[in-house]
Amino acid sequence: MNLWVKRLFNSLSPLGRGKGEGETPPLLTSPQRGRKLVNMDLKNKIIAVTGASGMLGVYICRALLAEGARVRGVVSDPQKAAFLEKEGVVFARADLGDRPSLSRAFHGVEALISNAALYSMKKMLAWEENYRANKIGTENVYEAAHQAGLKRIVHISTFGVYKLRIGRAVTEDSPQYEGEKREGGAYRATKQMSEALAWNLAKKYGFQLTTLRPPAIYGARDPNFMNLFKKFMRGPVLPMPTKAIPLVYAGDVAQAVVASLKNDASGGRAYNTGNTNNSLYDFARVWKRVSGHGPLLIPLPMPVGLVIDSSRAERELGFCNRPFVEGLREIMTQEGL
Image (cartoon, rainbow, N blue to C red; front, side, top):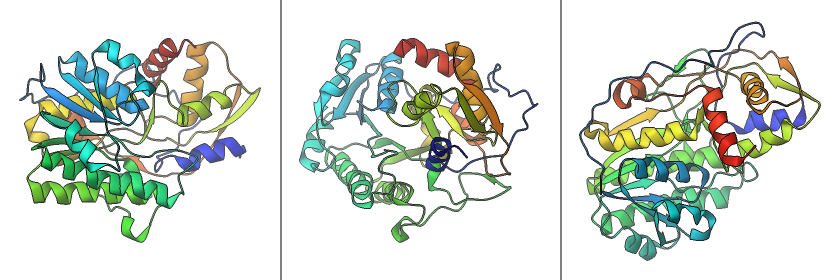
């Protein structure tokens, strides 16, 4: 297998069923939307977003602004996303390792999106860095939230917390890696520890907690998946796996965040937010179609793997994982590609 393809394939969250070359992927029609149960009006609510300057954080901030929320971006370096200030985000400088600065940033906030974490394809196995950001950082965020009197939190976890289960759909109740035993590698293990800690502190302090478990996320300004994929698409020939993989557009995860806040019944619930209908081969095909250029694509048949079940999020949050063609068009428009 092409070395870059192997590197990308191995770095993503657990994968799904394969797809034959001759099949037509479901790229052009949106999934059935579930019924939304709306209880909270976000207009003029002060919502804090940790990691607001990151790829997903930007999408979350914009989705909240679109609902009329007053968004406070909690970041260590506001200059990384200074453009958000012009859109209405107010930044509060704080660091995951500095609990007092987090407490100050959360003062007067009505809900928190715990989004900040370390995710770097170059540091997937760096235990100390992942542990410090994902485990210790989460502890500091939640302790600071308690000190600030916060009660409502949406936590961004990952589909990578689950153990591999060949041939069976992975639901929110499927077995997880044991992070304390460092299972699954540094990133997955510390994210599992992070979410487990979030639930424990929610019980201790009475937080109304919702956790979202997205698979590999693609979006604009992405230094990981999208950055590597751009390099793939510059070559003359590209072999790509036809095995389905749970990918999700960052905008759809952001909408799930909004839906969680607006649905009081989501408190105490975890949600998978992704699907396995398409493959990296499908993604490359659509990229080539939307951009108007790209390499000769060679399908690489792959064996059966995992299937992600996001039906709970579809029913309770109205979650919709939009087709690649819609997500990639939005990304290429934003990035001027």
